[in-house]
Image (cartoon, rainbow, N blue to C red; front, side):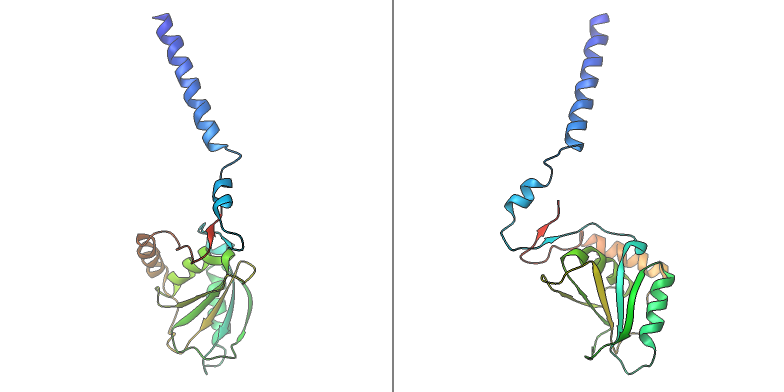
Length: 171
C-alpha cells in the first residue's frame, strides 16, 4: 500500500513537470520563425478586446461629419480612435478596412461591426497596429451589440483570423 502511494506521488510529480515544461517552453515559436521565409511579415492573429484596438476613421462620402459620428460610435464602444477626417478617394461599399501584419486580428474584430460587409485591404508593408476605417457610400450605421456578437460568432465559425498570403503567424 505504501509503495502504491509513493508511485502515485511520483506519477503526479512527473505529470506536473511535463505540464510545466510544455507551458514554459522557452523555444516555443522558434520553429515557426525558423520556417518563415526571409522577408515575409510575421502576423499577429491574437484577437483583442475593443479597448486594445486602435483605429483611424475617414469619411469617403459626401455626408458631412460622418467620420466624426462614426469615430464617436467607436469611441463609445471603447475603441482607441486616433484620428478622424475625410478621405481623398471614394468608396462605393459599406466600408474599407486597411491594415498591416500587426493589425490582422484587430481588422477581423472590426469587420463584425460592419456585419462582415466591409471590404478589407491588407498591405504587408504597412507598419503599426492601427486599422484604417474608410466609411463608404453604402454605410448606414454600426451594428448593435447583439448584431456584433452574432457576427463575431459567424466570423469565428469560419475560423480564427485568416493568415494573409506570404506571411507567417507570430509565435
